[in-house]
Length: 260
Image: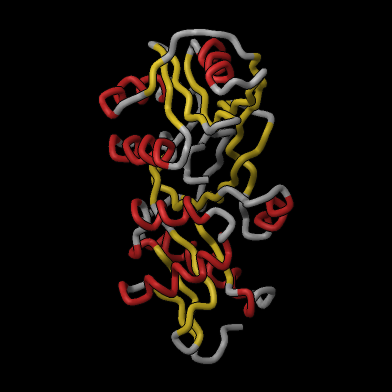
């Protein structure tokens, strides 16, 4: 049941500071990323709030992503409940409202990346199902010539990405620029050869794509002075995210680099 004096509404500019405070309560373990995200990505218009007496009790962001072959889906991101208000059904009400808003706006579904494995079962109660998968592989270090990606390389990156054989989000030039900037600013980097690319942190590769990915991954292990490095890529064995479609069915899909 809704609380007295409660309201579910989209955030307004004057809510920004309180949104950031709740974000830091929920996700305070990575301050550098939080600062970068709010300076470069955060959009107050995407934030759905549950307020009680005009104070934020819970929130989630609802940016839109186009999935090839499906349509526009909402990415539930940064879902958080104030510590004093947890386990009272508030997030349930907020998610259910987000589904109503999606349908009103013609979005075909909702997707998210659970913060840990235990939450996959939690989200099934809302109709989400495992859908977005990756595979992981460890590559031994070996020397090979690679280059660091620049914005001018975005067409090549996108061409490699678009060869993904399963449904996946469309990535705009602006999206690629922001991802490259984030990795560069936060201690990682984006590397490529003529037919492969890697979004890499110091000790792991978050996304590895392309025909020459094996050599690229091995070269990055060598560059990092590691005996081997683990990389994530398109696959079918490890669930990364879940999806709830309002009509229709889906097969296995791929997404990553979602500020996850």
